[in-house]
Image (cartoon, helix red, strand yellow):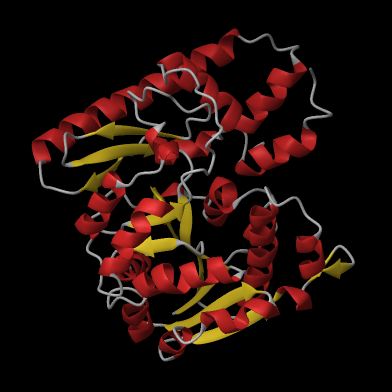
Length: 380
């Protein structure tokens, strides 16, 4: 078996954050070392030439476990110029996702030349609990062709001192859940069922389980692993929206991690990230039914109807009770969505477009990125 791991990161601040936190967690015994003991591993890093030295000396530890390849933006063509030139002339608010999409496509094109290859798409600030990568491999050995997981976003300014005091010691899953609970970013906090300032884009609904952890219902988990298929390469959105569902046509081929005990990972963002977002409506059944019609595809239901348990301390009875409530809530959302679709007038062209996006194949899904390109031609 083979794994080809992807990350794209550039600039001294972001590269150093990657090596100090993300890479340090990935070098825990149950992550890359466990993977490299049972499979061939290539770790491909996309960056610019000016950033190459910032990966030193930590990258030497990775080179002992995997083939490490650097691919430079200056060497990648993008619309008749080098990708590095496109980056320098792009809107900084959207450049990361665009670079991530273009470089991950390049990565997948290189990986398709290898047999028995699985792709792992990582973000440069993903911090994993020890044993996470081993669990991904375990599920692949059992026959799963893709692995989905959902991260917890942390406040960078608060979490970094804590992580710095712990790493490079391996992080346990419960340890990382506790860090997540105590230093959770305002964005996921706005997605709790009882949030005082609800999100305007409720792509996830969270439920507290006393002080023992929380449960999350999520539409768009991250594609942590998938076996290569040509249909995946030319995806149009961010990784989370469609890659997994293009990777597997049969839901049973996909493993969705529902317990932090098996795999836990966090992402660190400045507290100001999405800081200007206005408050939305509380996530009532009707609000969420409209959200699923206009912002998801029916196959995302696979994730939303299976709550994820984030466990900081054992309390089986409390977790089961919250999970039952979460499942009932999700079931009501989709029943209400069916009723709303039945009420819409067929001649409405805009509604017809969104109905096809929701009910059709994942290739028809109108993600936020596609919507932004289409907004000037969509029916009013």
